[in-house]
Amino acid sequence: MANSFLNLDDDDDKPQTDINIGAGLKSKPKVTRTKPDKGAVAKAGEAHGFTRTTDPSAAPMPLPRRGRPPLNEAMTYWRIYLSDTLREELSQLRDEEGRRLNDVIEDMLVAYKKTKD
Image (cartoon, rainbow, N blue to C red; front, side, top):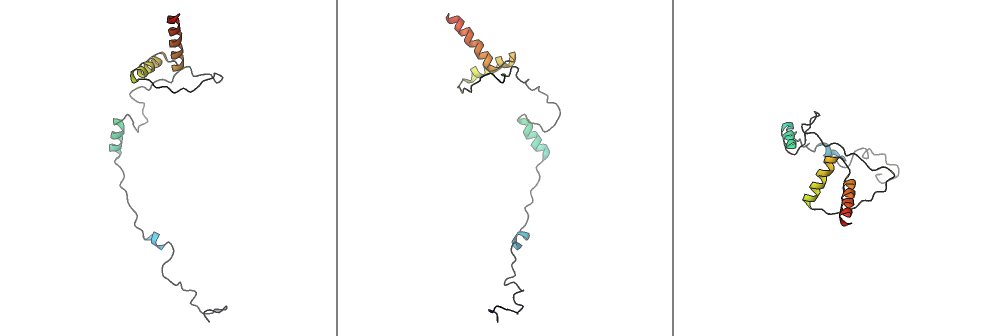
């Protein structure tokens, strides 16, 4: 009567195997990780100029540049390659005057055209 439609035997209540689905996940050992030393992490970060403190930084951050372009000014992204020394000099000039690099280059072009005339 095991293969009949009306199977009244109570063998169906018992699972065929004792392995339950997902039982292996419960017995899996949990890997414990040691927490990093906060002092060592802070020391490594300070070597690269990063601190986890919220105190004001010792070195003042450069001020935001003035003269952002107006919303209606047409600007184009132009990628150029410069030597390291020229880039540093232009960046220093830009930071000292607090102007956009675009304005510095425009003034340089005007000065160049005046010498050519």
